[in-house]
Length: 415
Length: 169
Ligand SMILES: Cc1cc2nc3c(=O)[nH]c(=O)nc-3n(C[C@H](O)[C@H](O)[C@H](O)COP(=O)(O)O)c2cc1C
Ligand code: SF4
Ligand code: FES
Image (cartoon, rainbow over all chains, first blue to last red; front, side):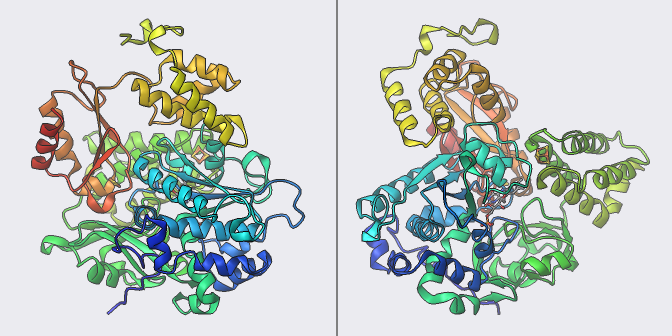
């Protein structure tokens, strides 16, 4: 039996966590108190030691990213919480923000202090308006309690958080597009380098971290890196929020250690495929992750094991498809999404994905022809590695996996 | 009321920013380290008031933020949540992405389409409903999902949709 570990969701189900007093009553803001007694560099080291890796999709080690900020500070530093939650199949960050907003706020203040940041932003997807309101309220209450604002808890540290809503552009989840968006511009990703840690928001050093990453900090501060490392997998410590959707008996968000077996997760946490159907396919890390076949799911959900299995952990959004699912139809939905969300500034992504979309549309409406699949695969190979941000690349690889794994279903459309 | 692009006027008095809106936008401007950051939240203030982003409001906003209407247009058109034309009193946005499709989003869309007698992208003649298809709403575990104005409706069934529409009457 796999064992649930409630670190990030320890207060989910406890009523009234939105109220600061209730949060304090269960030990909230104690971690911040501990953190403020330490030197910021000590905190960065502790996070490095904890082997916390970013939960936004790429799994970059958090403490190491933080250490990229220039040592010599001669400009404001910004901390951005990425709450865009746009990856289809992903609905995890909202669990924290809706049910335990102070956990995120506390995590952000800790990160802000460790980074010597002057101001924090929470960039939340525009549709989550009521959650933005919950966060605003939590921030106002924290300010009232001198946990935000000037001279936090008498430490001499000043920090504030601004909530900003996106407006329905998936690409704004990419960190440099997100920065452009906060600057009041269309969300077109920037060329890297320079990385945001050097040139970010308003051209100042900036760190972008996912909600789930930041929400892990209070636990690490309170219990220490060693305790945190006891959970999870090799070089991937801690717990992960896995969101399971599609054809399962009990869809939802479940918290398990990183490295939990995918098959066990689907069978035990989500109750397996519903209506007694057989499993056909799984997309394990949000729609950008390459699909795996139903008989290929015996691998661990951590960053490296997923790569080895030919896919990626991504956001941990597990999409489950039963035997009746038409894979070409899913692929069509998928390519429509990527084409719709492409910012359009690089040709392979804009034109290449667009061309694939057109061919697939023909195939699905009975106008496919022999050679179509080869053309699509040629296009995906051309797109891979030639785009400015990972969106185009991910779209191409995801479609490629659909065709490679379920080729016969596509072939039957062109014969 | 201006309803087709050809009749939009940039100085339409109907879309004059109210003093309350001005105050709210001024507050935004003072909140951010740089003025331009107030643009996206200011557009929401405009949309909350008018239901869409009228060109006349863009011109006024450009003056307040020391920018050009063109720059604001590029933002309004880039982001899908800003309505470039008026929408119905109830803007129904149904998720069409994978998890929702697997759970029957198409039935929900077809049902809404038939009931309201409009196709996705259209508004009913009485201007009461607009039906749109959107990408993932971040609620995939309770698919199928739709949003009406600012409210989410999850685990949809045809029956549930009927009840929801009735409650909007
Ligand atoms: C197209 C695209 C969309 C992304 N969407 C999100 C998102 O919704 N939320 C998120 O946290 N990271 C997203 N990311 C990853 C961010 O660019 C960035 O790596 C992450 O926020 C860093 O935080 P972490 O180090 O805590 O993971 C996206 C990346 C790409 C390329
Ligand atoms: S890969 Fe696509 S989304 Fe990314 S920058 Fe290029 S065009 Fe824009
Ligand atoms: S796929 Fe519909 S809410 Fe995510």
